[in-house]
Amino acid sequence: MVKPCWTMLRPLLSEKLRKRVYFHSNVKELLNYFPCSILPVEYGGALKENSEEDWLRKANKEHENYGVTGQPNYF
Image 1: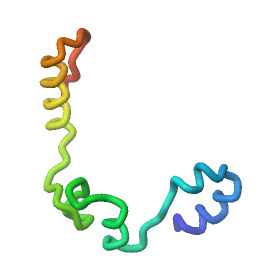
Image 2 (image 1 turned 90 degrees about the vertical axis):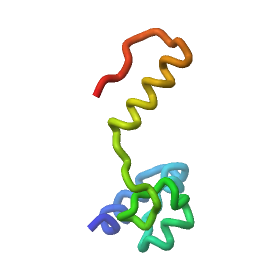
Image 3 (image 1 turned 135 degrees about the horizontal axis):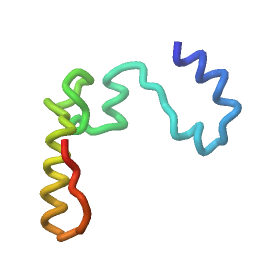
Image 4 (image 1 turned 120 degrees about the horizontal axis):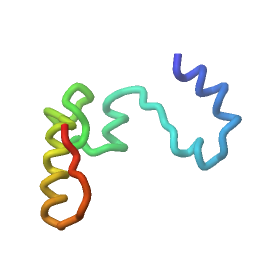
């Protein structure tokens, strides 16, 4: 379904945008573009959990380390 839509939309986009979009037909091909460490397990990667809550905790900790003022992100 996506490929036919992309085929119709592609000519309307600039060359720069066309080069940024790529559809992978299988997991092996996907691993040629992205390291295994950043892909979730369900896509053949090694990342077991990609929790936004954990990321916000880490971001808030870094926020404290650098003394940046402003409201921290709460989840």
